[in-house]
Amino acid sequence: MSSRCRALLGRRPRLLSALPAAALALTVTTGAAAAPVWTGDFETGDLSQWNTTLNGERISVVTSPVLQGTRAGQVQLTNDATWPNGIKRVELNHKPAAGRTAEGKDTYFAWSFYLPEALAADPPTQIGYWESDATYNQVMSFEVTGQNISFATRKPANKVHWQASGAVTPGVWHRIALHIRWSTNQAQGSVDVWFDGEQVVTGGQAQTLADGNAHFTQIGLLRNPSEFTDSPIIVIDDAVEGDTLEDVRPALPSTGEGGAGGAGGGGTGGGDNTGGAGATTSGSGGAGGGTGAGTGGGGGDAASGSGATTSAASGAGSTGSGTGEVVDEGDGGDEGGCSFRAAGSPAAPGSVALAGLVAALAFARRRGRR
Image 1 (spheres, helix red, strand yellow):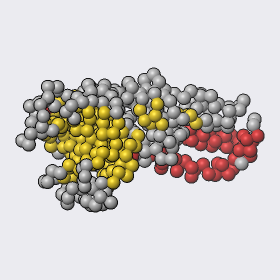
Image 2 (tube, helix red, strand yellow):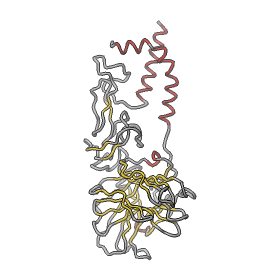
Image 3 (cartoon, helix red, strand yellow):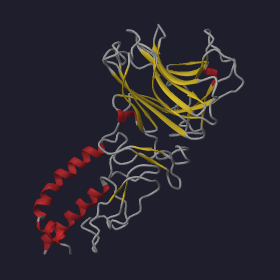
Image 4 (cartoon, helix red, strand yellow):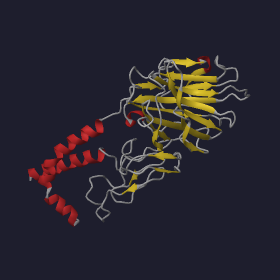
């Protein structure tokens, strides 16, 4: 037995006395769950989760492709989908509850989308934006041309905060998340943006409120007045509004049809989707994994796709499907370290600690009966 293990066993009364409190803390931290204030995931089988639609006869609920659950919403834009002002549009509308977009408030919002084919390079297509109610002034939007995407705010002047070439890969799922600080004052309003789990805009200053009216979002396909011959389709799933970044899950889930690179989606990395102090990693997934951003610190569950993975107690465990940071929690000695985890098993937070708690208490009982 290693000297480290002897030292730990020699201090077992102190260790065991601390275990109940540690177990309680573990229960509290692992039992917490995000709670979106609104969900638009089409699991109702219709469009009732959304406030309204624009040219809604071109929106349908489908069972494939689907990112989560069993249903998603499909939007198809055709040249004759003309609004009275000449704009070509087919969209879903979500209005946050009264007061949630008022001066000084914060909104977190996210949705996932899937393009069976790349959108046209010309004319440009908006896939999501926010604007004011009653006065209909757009304050920010996402625009796609071909496989390129950009995010811009509109007030006090048009400003492109982020653009990425080749980022919108057809045939896979992508996810956009926003944190908006609402204000009519450019110095007070700001926007944070995440794309496939990676933060691409941090504290982008803008006048995020056009005026004192409530603001809403519309998701789908919109083109300014123009003639076109294609008939693009976008599939929407897992739209959520919340009070925190954790509520809206900025990274793609580890399962589902897609994720940039194939089945499996983007990995969520260590811990939770919000990351924390850990570095964001991205890379090419292994079998079943996708190329995508995995956020979070080291030491979390192994995820399909990019993200943090953990080794076995022996220090020589597999890194799982995907690339990312490897965290060795074992001591690497001939005796497999002092971990209660069986050699070769994954380091799952919570389950490892609980297994250690049970084993430690059983050890104490056996000692007491001698």
